[in-house]
Image (tube, rainbow, N blue to C red):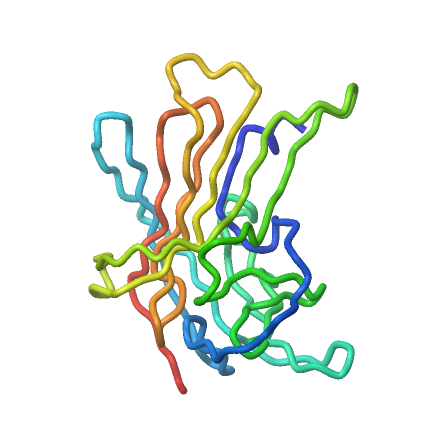
Length: 214
């Protein structure tokens, strides 16, 4: 429980999200084709802005597709540290493009390029003894109107942005804090962040290289 509370990460499969509805538009921010892959390097950024690169890389590949409730989903396999052990290869996501929304196998909406007003995902960590909310994460799309540069290149992006609040004692750390998952059209996820509740450090996963077969 303590480990889970300490770690906050912008990951789609950890969130409780709205059911898919009002689906209208086509999306290209997560290219879905078997064989597509993405490789990320992690950087730790301290409170002074100093960066330390981690030499190990995370890799994610669309390995296969599968049918669930008569719909085709794509199975993402790879490593997803720190939620998986560094070298523990396995399934990290099962997703499909539902005419403008990214949804998972439970029918939950995880990304859209058009709705920038509604909260589209949330996750709460509660105290098991008294039911109080210890950590609350709410996610909303943010049209950043900026270019993000990572080792793989520079990209126009949309941001799946998480706002994190906590009732826990965090000396010297101001809340709310923010999580970011930046997506580039035709490329996919190019940068995403996570942090530990009682640490000022931010961790960024930056896209190093990728292959997209559309």
